[in-house]
Image 1 (cartoon, one colour):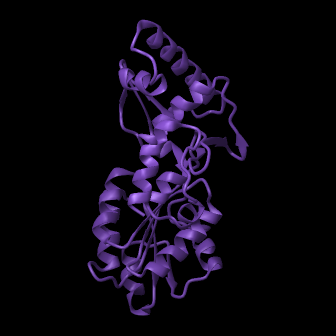
Image 2 (tube, rainbow, N blue to C red):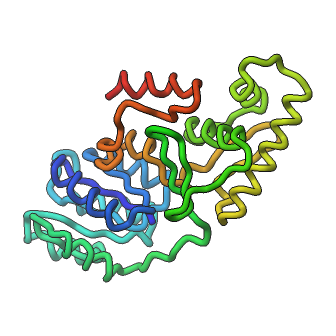
Image 3 (cartoon, rainbow, N blue to C red):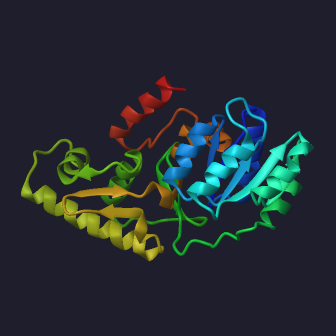
Length: 263
């Protein structure tokens, strides 16, 4: 499930995002103070539910709802507002609910139980990935076992690249940084890719990997990752960062330095 949360009040934004994250830990939650940023994200992903404030500095929430509906007519709209006079307008954009501030956890959950367009569960498993501290991967609540440590490192590097395409030459250089490029290394890489494919298939998550003829990537929409959520300032991820990132891999120090410089 994918949520958009839009509110120009930071406290309200974080409050709703936290409730959703705690209640739907496998969901993707994208929080924005600026409506234009929310619209751009909605164009890139299929949004299931949007929690929208109505009176915001840069755009009225009713107008934003209309834009989101134009992008995807199946998006459920839930308004959160301190103003009751917009209830009729909310009805006209077929909102699922209209919650008065300060909203409660129960009212949010009740609204989720009565969506106009019920959200269908995904067919495949969405992996939960922990980057802060040591790199670990979970299917549900169970850690995934990698037969080879290099297979795990390969997957970690693809996660670090956040969906960017990685050439096979790049991957061999990263995984065997102390060795010269050779046919033997490329053969080893092919074996690792095959092993990674089998590992992901074993937990019903094969669509996480995007494999082309001479390149490899992951689909970020198929994972839940503390590092990605940290970038979007999701509270649980911000609070879980303690100065460590994929600690077992030396190449991860570059990303760690980036995180530290942009906190």
